[in-house]
Image (cartoon, rainbow, N blue to C red; front, side):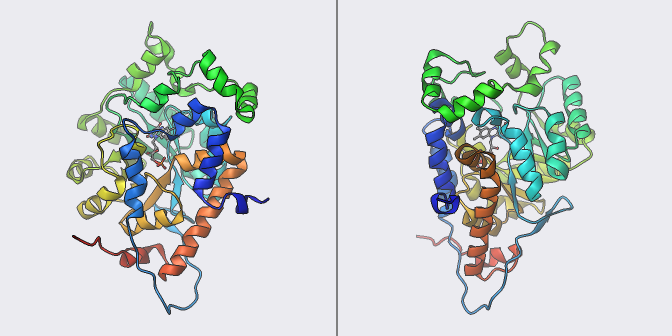
Length: 381
Ligand SMILES: Cc1cc2nc3c(=O)[nH]c(=O)nc-3n(C[C@H](O)[C@H](O)[C@H](O)COP(=O)(O)O)c2cc1C
């Protein structure tokens, strides 16, 4: 049976991924925090959005292209940052970077990825983005920026919604430790998932290779405390000013939900705002990105990047209709990788493209810019 009949939607890839991953890996990838309300709200808020279909508009092929930071993209979506993608699939970061380059999508490499910027930048090509968890130490900060720039990363993304560690109760229940340690309990979970076990046996358990490289710089700290010491500081406005002064390419702040923060971000000279509740992984009380997007759209003309809970091409159209300029996804790419291996990535690009095109045909939208006028305002009462 072809993939098209077995996995027509992201939900099918997700179900297959769940069946192929050891429990602790699945919980790492899929979980939010607390009761998981904020994670669920991401998709639910999108799916409440209705759009008006159009009739008698004649035949056309929709144009899915857009421009962001002076780069033309054939599709309005990309790959958001995921720490330790390599835990989900062997060499995941390389596969993601190659697939992104082939489809001319941006790929955002996380500070806590399992591969270094030097290894990934050249594979991701002209649309390599680097996501920064703010290092405390100025020397390390300077070094990370230089390494990202030298490796070809064009856009810098500062994530600001991890001021403290979150509890991620599902991950704890599964027996996952930081960094992952293969306890007998985890070994038993691995034994049930031979495809994953085989892949990891070849590659070895992944590590946060960029962070590992700085372990000599703060002596005497064990490795988890070390990552925490290196990165877990809540940046402030002065930190953002410092980054602006030291990065001359596009600078994006990720994890924005409050329109009241817009003036501060504009004053700091950022080039884009990434609306996200971190997939519900940080604060279970947070609103869904889709609820905040229209408010932030009203507050600024800066490019807006959106993520959170995309379940298919129609959700991408909904976010664009609400005022997003670009849409990122994190978990769906990893569901595709775990479900089908590397070929899952171009496959996901294909089904998202087909879904967007079909829905734009229903909406009579020839260009992405036509989408906002098809939005039905929420009915009151
Ligand atoms: C397993 C996992 C790891 C993540 N790691 C990072 C990270 O290192 N940096 C970051 O800024 N966001 C990280 N995120 C958040 C995602 O970039 C994204 O904001 C969130 O998952 C919502 O998108 P989604 O609903 O498409 O998954 C991570 C998310 C997941 C699921």
